[in-house]
Amino acid sequence: MDKHLKEHIAYLLCVNIDRIQSVSGGDISEAYLLETETERFFCKINHGKNGYELFKAEKLGLEAIAQSKTIGVPKILLCESLEKGGFLVMDYIEPKRPTETDFELLGHQLAALHHHTTQNEFGFSTDNFIGNLIQSNSNHMQWGEFYVQERLMPQLQLAKEMGKLNDGEIPTEDKLLQSCQNLFPNAKPSLLHGDLWSGNYLISQNGTPYLIDPAVYYGHHEVDLAMTRLFGGFGPSFYSAYQEHFRPVGHENERNDLYQLYYLLVHLNLFGSSYKASVTQILQRYFK
Image (cartoon, rainbow, N blue to C red; front, side, top):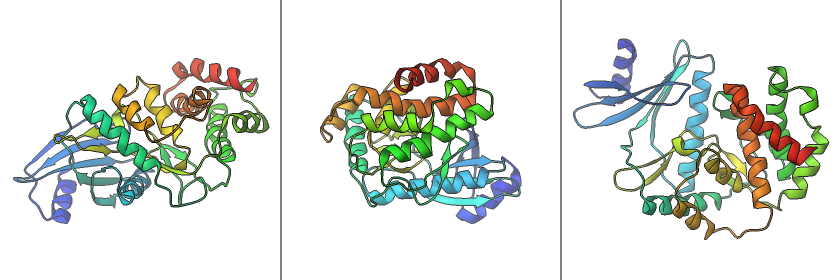
């Protein structure tokens, strides 16, 4: 971390920063643990052209989850622009390895978040990001229309522009809408984390679950569940606890595939061709 930035953060927080340690913070931003005599803070820095916008969106998402009063998030302390990019400072949460009891509590609290509804439309007040890709959140009354027009079509078009999919591999919007509407229930808008894989939650030392790095919007609650399963899944007690709060309505497995398709497309566009086979398999299964 730059010396001047360290001094600037210390001034804004009214503390003396004694130690700075680089920590794992994902693929997009630099991440640091800042320590004083009595406190610890987590700082992310991004010097990209969208760095400050990324952090503003993250702050807004964490605040939306916090306002639901259903599950913990780190408290945001600073969100500031830099000459290039920006930085974000929040409370540091010391994590521990989750137990089945911890997973059970996470399941109950995520279900409470998903029961939190403050709007009748699917979408969000602003666009935000999934990874460092723009995530469009224009509001729609129908879930199928939102999912196709704001989730699948933008990523499919981006994959085409980047040469990762060709015209013959991309279904028409009408075909996407028809197939999705046949499988989607009459859903109510739930507040979603939006990118809930195993790297985006923490269990604190006292067992409190925290969500981090959100890509929030109001959508169908099963989207978050599908993402939890994409890269190995959470503990069994997480799913059994969560399912106490939502009754099956049929076609869960098919929707799981369709919801994972969005995240696989995002990974195809961010990380390359190793995800193409998974994408095309789902496209051929549901849209041919």
